[in-house]
Length: 268
Image (cartoon, rainbow, N blue to C red; front, side, top):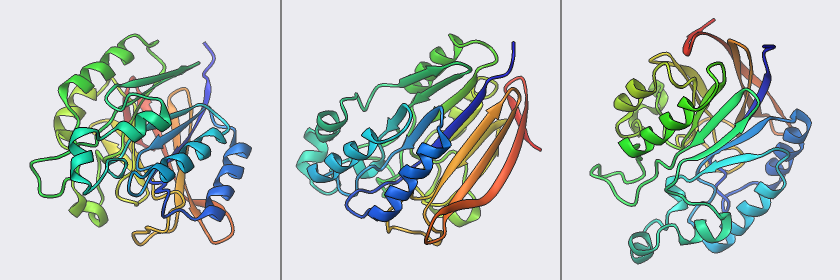
């Protein structure tokens, strides 16, 4: 079978309410030109989970040039509005995005199966409730979707919280149960996508490629400009290109190539 060319645009941390409209419009224009197979939206669509922010997020998603697989982030919960956070935490999400934040959402295309999971939680044992978790039920759902896919398909997990950190983001913490997740996903998944820390990089963790992207177009920068990732895959090769905003346009800042043997990846 001839390898399928796949292109995934990965964006995260839109933070409507703190968005920069000119950067958002430039990103939309570039995505239309890139014509991706899928747009992976890795959470934090809003800043404070207000109605107006969700309306703005939905309007943006409607303009994307390809199917979007969208997962929530911790900012998409009501924050310190305690009553709403614990009694109806996802009501605005359901109302405006028409999706179940608890369910694993799958997208399938020729040569691709992608599963989105919600790693944001209402509360946690760690004092920093912005840290997320992945649980056994979610991992079972991911595994079931991948087990039904053709063996050569690129298998992608889309989440908000990171499975791999660099020293610059070490203080933010990995997603809860990350080690158990990586063990269960090894040789079953190919690519883990995330956001949350507003830093862009990629690497290999337990044989899986992990790609993190910065904030796409908000002013909540963490020492790096706005960015998104463009991921291209064909057969057993994959490239992750991080594209930084330079004040006028997005340009490639870093490009990393990967190769797989089965579903085990290494840096080329």
